[in-house]
Each structure stands twice: as C-alpha cells, then as structure tokens.
Image (cartoon, rainbow over the protein chains, first blue to last red):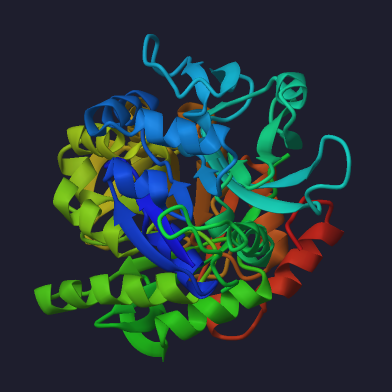
Length: 215
Length: 254
C-alpha cells in the first residue's frame, strides 16, 4: 500500500511515517495536488497552527483535492490539527477557513483545565461499538465539542473528557479523523491505523483502475 | 480525564544510555532503542532522551539515536540537551522527536521559546528548568541552575516558569537539583509552586525512589513523573510502578 502524506510544512511527519512503515505501508511525503488527489491512501498530519496550515493549503492548491477525496469517501486519515482543518473555522485563527467538511468551529479548551491537554486520555464510543475503548495520546489546546453535529453528519463518533466531553475521533467509511495521535498511542493506536489501512487496501486505484492487494 | 504519565528518562552520551548522580560518574546503562522498546512494553507513557554529550561528535550521534528510538517505539518521544537554535530543534523533530526540550539556551535567550512555539506549536516546546533551593536570606525560594548545576543564575525558578509558559512553552520539565539522584523523593513544594505559577503541564524530575514519591508529586500538582535510575537499575519495572500508583488511587494507563 502506497500512502501519500501531505507535507503541510508545519507538521512533524516522522512519527506518522514510522507508524505506517511498521504496518508495512510505503510512504511518500508530497505537496503535489495531483498525487494527493490520486493516492490510494492519504494522510493529513498536523502539528502547528491552524492559520499556518490553512494558508499552506491555499498556497499549494491542496484545498480542492483534499476536500474532494474526503467527500468522495476515499481513504484518508487526518490527525490532530489535520482533523481540525476539516471544520469551517477555528477560534485559534479568526478568518482562516478550514476545509468546510464539518459544520462547526473548533473551540479552545476553557481556562479551568490545563492547556494544552497533554497526555493520555480514555477514548470511548459516543454511541455504538466503535472504537474499542482505549487510552490515546493527545497534545491539543483546541477541540471540536459538538458531538451531535458529527452524528447528524453521519459520522461515527469517539469521545473523551477534558472540561466535558469532546470529539476524540470520527469515522465515516474509509475516512478517519483523530484529534489524538494514533501513531503515538501505543498498540491501541497502531491497531486503529492498521484497521484504516485495511479499508484503504480494498480501494480501487484511481490511476490504474485496478484493485490494490492488501498489504 | 488525563492519566498520570510515567516517563523513563534516557541520558544519552555518544549513542549509549548512561547513568550517574548529579551528572557525575557516568556509567553505561544500555542501548537507547532497546531500552525505549522495553519501557514501552512495560507501559511507559512517553520516553525522554537527554543528550548529555560533552562533544560535538556526541551531538551528531544524538540525531542518529533519535531516529533509532523513534523507529523502535510507538509512544511520544521528547528530546533535549544542547538545543540552542531553531535549527537544532528542527533537526531533532525531523529525526523523530515529537517534542523538543530547551534549557540553558532559553535561560540565556527567552525569546527562543517564543520562536519555537511559533514555528512548531506550543505542544512541541518543553522548557526544562533545573532548580536549586536557595539558602540564607532567600530561603524558601528556588534558583535556576544551568550547565549541569555548575552555574547558578540568580534567576527565580518560579518566575521563570511563569514567563516560559507565557512565551509559549507547552510543558515544564522540572528537575530539583537538590533531590536529583538522592532517592529522597521529589521536591513537592517546588512542584506546587511551579504548577500554580505556570498553569501548564509539569513533568516532575529528581529524587524518586518509588511509587509513593510519585503519588506525593501528583498530589502537589504534577501531571507526569520522570525517573531514570529506578528503572535502569531494575529496582522497579514501569508496569509495577503503575499498578502500585493505581492502588494508591491515581489514574494511570494500564
């Protein structure tokens, strides 16, 4: 399985690459819109600021290819800031647009809890049986807290608590977005990424039209 | 709610883990990638690597060490020791560190903390503070020490912690110079003062000889506890520490 990792320029990608390689995937880090549009699987990593990442998406012309592949349900994994970029906007950067896939504004954790949220928090299903409950590693000062808006949009939702419940991860078919870092969340996180890669392996390759073998 | 993090620390010199008391009498304690993987398997929540190399050759090796440890573990990796510039930090992040810790260079030039936060995000920036209890007229306060404790700065450690948080530190790695290597327990007064003044997460370091000390540190307000010798010497496996902490009523990831 070839995985295209989006070079947003503000993200540290070494841990994501190490995780995918352990799972047998081949990674290429790219900022080429065509490659990102056509890749069998793509990862939108994210460490850094919402504004810098939003500007970077415009500079590189990545907004449409990312939006298209996510709305089409093609295999895409968004991590941390990568998940926040799916929203309309963020309190972190007024006026900077997200990808507009989630109809919400990302909000800052209130002052009564330590910011950033840094460490391991218990992730569990908001409803249903996804995901298997487990501890995940978070490093964030902002989060999506409108669980119902996600559910109305047809997403499966995982939640955790820090100043009340917030959206820890969402999944719809082959699109997975995590506020936490699955690549840093031990065996539990690795299995989540492994399951996502598994769904990606059944995706018809857009460039060649043939199905890729499971890796 | 967040669990208390248990963080083994690897002091690395020229590609090998070393141990000593108050940065003196360093002895070999193993391969960093092997130790990192073992600690992850035992339940470590994060690994900290501190490069204690005295030479530039040693510093070059540190990048290679970070790459090897990153490939071997699936938990966060914080790296510090000798970070002086944005470029130093970038090299470590590209090699696979998730967070970079700065110490002396930030004391000398606090604006470095702000630049790192702007470039990499606050969650990537750890400010390490080595603090020593003041004596005489200044008893009840703590002073920042640098260069492995050989140099006292006259800077109030609590004031510096608050300033570092304002500048953009995402966490304070707080070492009690008086307690480091003694096994007498963490300096809980220092932890409480820094945690209250900085309002950001704190990793407590220096003085642990067992889970009871860690529980006291958490009671004082720390979010994570770091230890080296009790793990390297095999006195405690990480998993046993976490089970005992759970027995003491703390939230831990098991």
